Image (cartoon, rainbow, N blue to C red; front, side, top):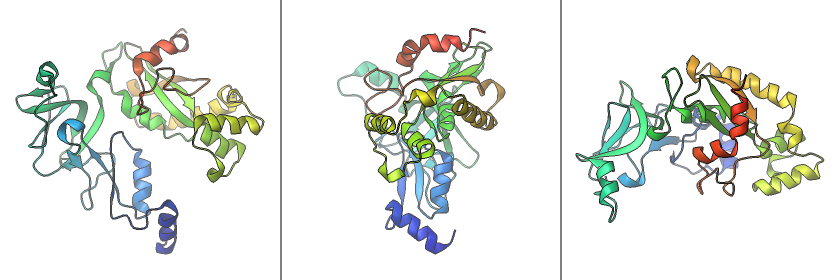
Length: 286
């Protein structure tokens, strides 16, 4: 892209004066990071948690490996436990939880903060987060599967809003997908992106105003075929036990009110398993 065109895109996105920006709290699609870098927008992924005063690792100019969360920041030590759990040590790590000695004893062991996250460190010192320790699935064949990476990869499909991986104690992996109503309004109905409301309820109302119900798409063979093609492509990023062998499209998105999302919009696995147990079992009934 030409410098002039990049400049216009940066201005349109509101990043003209940005020196650098940091993404954290949840994984960001590597394709988005690559796009921002190509546009000259310095967006870098980092990692940390409240218990270590937010920052522990960071990518930055001249030291950026997309797909990782960077190297340890100064005065921070990062190591992996035998089971892959990420351990942190430094003066910025908390002394403990307020008036909760039991939780502190489980989290701070020999001066190391046990994050509960599972990761890997490459030969250059870049840390990659592969999932949460308590969320690791074990297939019926004994294969450890980290759902978070697979879910975030499948959410790169434009029409997908949420992906919930199923596979713990199962013979193969499957997934529950929900559809992104905003993407439907943009790509299927043909509305201008700036005219599409952000609120999910308002999006459904606009969909109905344009003569459609969400079921027109969740029950559509064409939409399922489109998603299947993308799943087949993305499966190539994973080993055979991690690949999706089948999936189901839910009639609605996950919600906070139904207990499926936290207030910060992270999925609640137990509640989703309970709410959609019949659909999950149907993917393993044959």
